[in-house]
Structure formats: C-alpha cells, structure tokens
Image 1: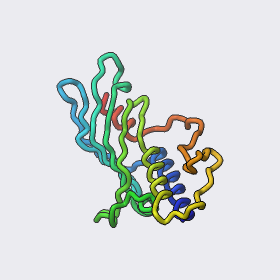
Image 2: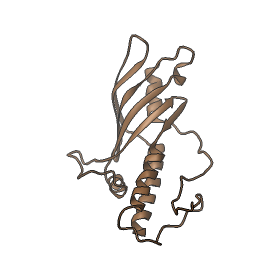
Image 3: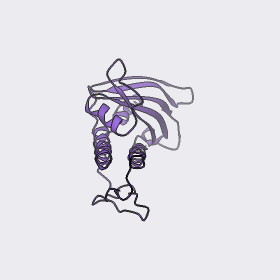
Image 4: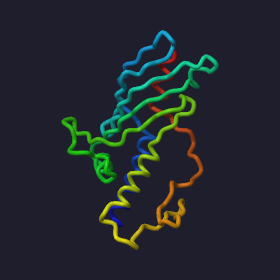
Amino acid sequence: KIAKIGAAMTAAAKLQKAVADFQYTSATIKASRLASGSIKLESADIRNEALHLAAKGGISVDPKLGFADWPMAFNTQIRGAGEFAQYFQALGFAGGPATADGFTDGPGVNVTGSLNQVKTDLAEKLQQAVDNVRASPTATPGNQPQASPNTRATPSGKTPATETTPAPKKRSPFGDLLKELGR
C-alpha cells in the first residue's frame, strides 16, 4: 500500500511539472469574437507526443481592463500516453483502456483568472487523487506515510497541500495562444 501511495505522489508531482512546462508541438483552436467583444473558445486541441489538452470556454469583456486582464474560464481535459497514461492510472483518473489514438483520460481541469494571472485547480485535483489512493480500502492502519519535508502532518494523519514559495511565473500554452487571439 505504501508503494501505491508513493507511486501516486510521484505521479502527481511529475504531472504538475509536465503541465507547467508543457512544450506543445501543435495547437488547433476554433474561437470566435462575439458581438459583445467576448471570445468564445469553441474548441482547443493542444498537444505533443505524450500529452493532449482539450479545452472549451471563453474570455469575457471587461471594458475597464486591458485584454490580458479580462476574466476567462475554460474547462480542460488532460489526456496522456506512455508514462503519463501510467500516472493517470496510478492516480485513478483512467476510467478504462486507452482510446484508439493511444491516449488515456486524465483529470478535467478548470482554468480561470486572466492571461496575466492564470489559475487552475490542477494541484487540488492531484492532491484529491493522492488522498483517494491513501484512503483506498487496502490501507493498513498505522502504515500512513510520513509527511515529506515540505509538508506538515495533521492530527488526522493526513498531509495537507505542500506549503512552498510560489514558483516563478511560467508560460502558459493557453496564454500564448489567447494573446494571439486578442491582437
């Protein structure tokens, strides 16, 4: 059981890093500007050989703000092949075998904020997946994992989200593409 929890924690960390550093090789976007000036993202397909992000949503107009600060909301689905498919399985996201294109379903992620302040719930989704693995019925009482150096254990034995200094701002594939749409 400890090995399963360790694998889930490792998978979560590697997934978070891979998404933050996502080097896409292709991006196909279908978007339109509505009469109000808002941007409707009908579909986005952003991928490389191992990760695939699909998104829908939009950017709302706020006339008091510059385009890069307009509020946005996207529903994103992450899928992976190879090692990422294994990570999704370890975290319990994969609902079945890979699809015909070889990709396995990962988490759905909400992207909000603005182009200048992109926010996602990926960290929360990954933490919940690790917590679910930890709480699975095969857990043996007394064999709870110890907190890592960057976390603190609570009296319940659960480990809360890691408390670290915020990482430097990374480029966002959505941000890069949406800035082009705003030109």
